Length: 131
Image (cartoon, rainbow, N blue to C red):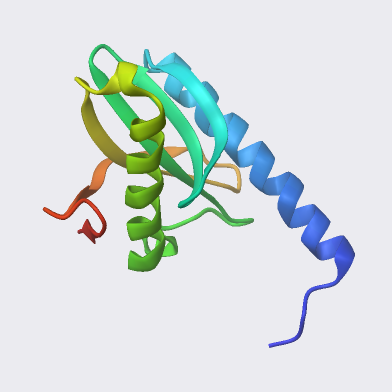
C-alpha cells in the first residue's frame, strides 16, 4: 500500500472532523447533550462523549467518502475505546452512577448518520470489548 500524500491526509483529517460534527448534530437532535469532543486520555481518544438522562455514551465516529459501514470498527479499536472510557470515568467521578454505553456513528457520502447503539459492551475486566 502506498503512503498517502500530505494533501490526502489533510483532506481525511478535515473529512473526519466534518463527520464528527455531523454525528454530534444528529445526537443533539435525538435529545443528547454533548459533554466533550475528541477527548484524549492516556488510553486513547474518544470521538464524542454525550449524555441523555443517566446514560453516558462514548461514541466512535467512522466517516468514509462513500459512507461508512459497521465493519469499519475493529475489535482492537473497540477495546481501546473501552479503556479510554474507563480512564475518562476515573478522571470524572461525577459520572460514576451513570449507565455506560459504547456507540458507533457511521457518516459519509450523502447519507444521514447511522447511529448504532450499544455496538459492544465492556468485558468483565473492563479492558476489552465484547461484540
